[in-house]
Image (cartoon, rainbow, N blue to C red; front, side, top):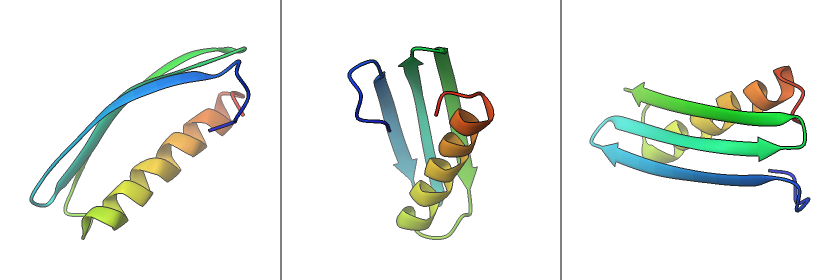
Length: 66
């Protein structure tokens, strides 16, 4: 996330065995994004969280938020 004070975000993560999920929002000078991600069988927790992080970063780049 950018460190500028013009960005706000919040999220609620969760996980069960073999499942990593996250739902959250990002407010920026260009708009607000709400994103919900659910993963199944991505390996361990770290692998799942990294995958969800990359998806979010890509969505922010594609929409011009960053």
